[in-house]
Length: 96
Length: 477
Ligand SMILES: [Zn+2]
Image (cartoon, rainbow over all chains, first blue to last red):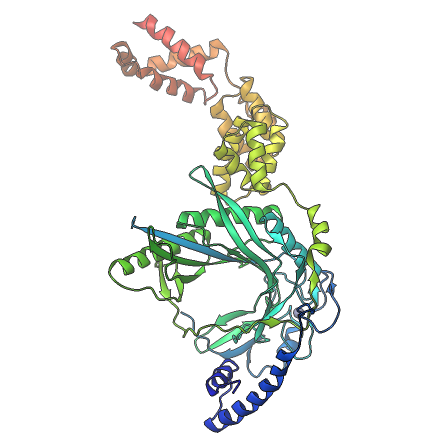
């Protein structure tokens, strides 16, 4: 086993996904197979390869510091499930 | 209390002074109507792509150099994953394994001694939106979302709240010199969190630390740390244990309290940001920036001491504010006694600025006005006492003190006849004090001098007045 049920439960919580016991069982098995497959990479000899953080061979992509037009507020909040004035509205976040 | 050692580390978040946001072209201007400086990128809409603002990197590099950091050859960005409504993508673009720079330091001056405070790292990230809380909901304005933010993390090198305060003051001074941020704590362009722990003296391992948030001034940071260190020492002293937690400072009551919201152990699952490429930082940015670096407060302080013969303290005060240092140097090029200039700037001028909430660059006093006035004192045209009110007058009217002296007839009276007349009158009107003097009270003469000065509206030359009074009183006896 490459992954345990507890790890899947933990990951589900981080992703704010609620899983039933049955789903947990199901996904643990699925993820286990995926991970096992990926583990094949460990058999490769990568000694001569530098670690990479980006899949494409490009670097130094940037823009100059120029202000562009923004969206009007009405447009920005158009699809918000809840709003108040021009502000997005969400469940109350508890703060002390 | 003295059996314990306090260990403090600070984390400063600094909004960089770019015109546009770090990954999109929205304006960073403060105070716009809610959600008017937003676009698909900074709202985290699906399919939008970030593009790095080169000036954010430049300002970051300037900061790194000013803080003596090692500027990295290659940098990259990472996603820091967590859920919070002010973070629309549910991850913050930040830097984890390859930040802009590491291993820096800055010097603080504590009790006349220099102390080096280590800087662990300086990295670039994006700011979040702003939350407002009503009775039953939280509201979000995303104007701030995507503003370039520099995180400056110190080593746990500070051993008192006072040192933490000095670190922040020194840092702010440097940041103002290199002009990378507004450094305005009230508007939130500079924010500070603190980590603090205590340990018995001689113990090597660090104690359990707490993180303090919600401090909106340097004084609040100091007060919060004083309270928290005391609390930890008391807790341990009475056999209790410190829990690792985040605490909020309540400035009204001067206490720190655990956050009410449930604290989870953070698991940010950093991974490389695939939408941004790596960047050859040193190669691309460093050259641009090196030419833009001004003389920093530390070297400037040393130069002020050797060039102008100022004390360590005077030099430190003057260079703490770049505009003040510039003002001093302008004056020093016009008037030879630098110490006297420093005294006026740090004394009467600073007092006036403090009273009126002004900075020296917004003060209506040309450098040649101050030095012109000092010349008049030297030549005996005005008394030092008149100069004090003349200075205020010049600041308030914006007029040249030389003109004001002429307009208001403030020239010092050195004419013996005029002083004589005033002395005469004062002696006549104050026979009791005169009697005191004659019966041996030497100090009584000063009371009479004061009266003569009042009568001449402070314009008489005090030395002459004393001289004449003594002569006359001896005659009287
Ligand atoms: Zn935007």
